[in-house]
Length: 218
Image 1 (cartoon, rainbow, N blue to C red):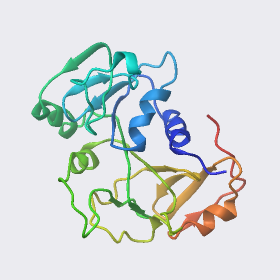
Image 2: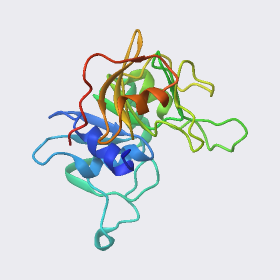
Image 3: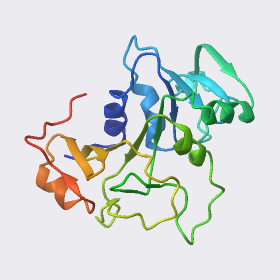
Image 4: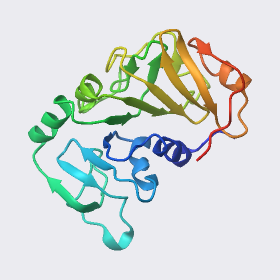
């Protein structure tokens, strides 16, 4: 019973801490905004110039002028601020973002991430991921454990152009929670109904298993 995208986002929300400034990348990471624990003070940052993103809007409160870096309409919380992208990237490059959550095509066992380009396919540009992986204090990757053909996306070495080198700290997939260590991927938790054997077969890179692996809690 692997998690769906919302399940991955809900589990990632458990990694948030009171007072964090957090940047959510395009795709699954944007869903994390819907699962911030009640009463927790977390400020969401967007590269296009918004600090204080709220949950996704309902049909009745959509404002087409309010978008995140992925061009999705968003809401904002009380006390939010708006600024230009130069100021926004100054916040990123200055190391003021506590946690970055990114999607990825591949992650290597040493923490390299490939997230911006598939050779032969049209891309609009690098986006802000290069700055985020270079400056963020903590980087969590949200991704599917395997591709559509069942091939592992957690590899010994990335095959696609890299976004960053040795920068990922933790990976949360539809199957597992893993920590990047000097020896490979350390398995911390497994999705409900997913066995350690399932995860081992779906992971190409070195997988470290110490003792009993608990199921995820939300």
